[in-house]
Length: 89
Image 1 (cartoon, rainbow, N blue to C red):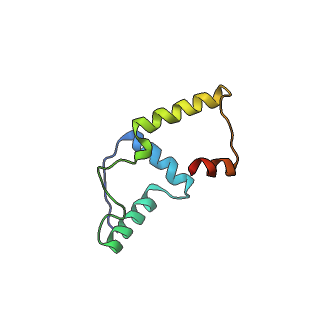
Image 2: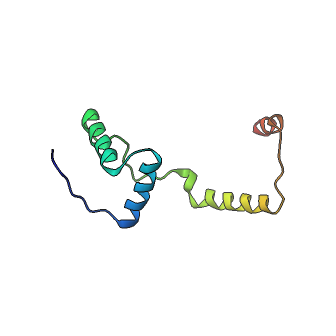
Image 3: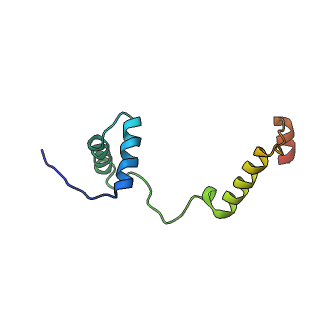
């Protein structure tokens, strides 16, 4: 069996170890899964892009932080599904 040594940022490894542990995996199993999927698909098994998710844009994060603050201050107004649907129209 072949052995591969890689270098990885300490913090990234720690976070990956925690994630994989939660999934019932270890680092070796997770890498084997990745490699097998790459071979099966004939490429990286996920999209690689420079695009960022618009959900995480600074403008959206600002609105979310403001909404959270308003909710903490009791300014949050709940609406029924019917009221939300009416707002959509």
